[in-house]
Length: 46
Image 1 (tube, rainbow, N blue to C red):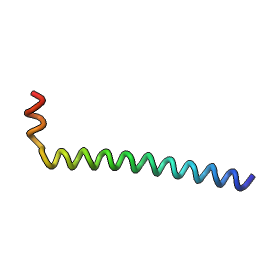
Image 2 (image 1 turned 180 degrees about the horizontal axis):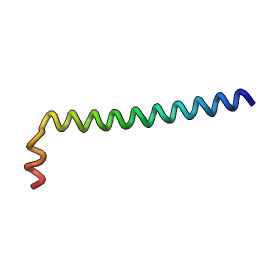
Image 3 (image 1 turned 120 degrees about the horizontal axis):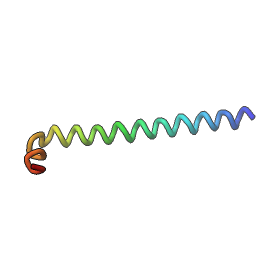
Image 4 (image 1 turned 60 degrees about the vertical axis):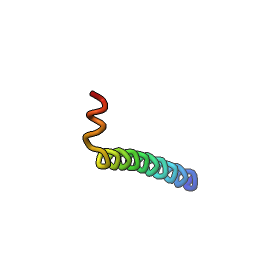
């Protein structure tokens, strides 16, 4: 019983870390892209 609870907690931690890592990498890539070409993208869209 204890082992199952531990595994459940571990799986929950891993999934939340994965979600956090995905969000951070997505935001990081977006910010880097914006910093590299801040205004050219906006001009292309219009």
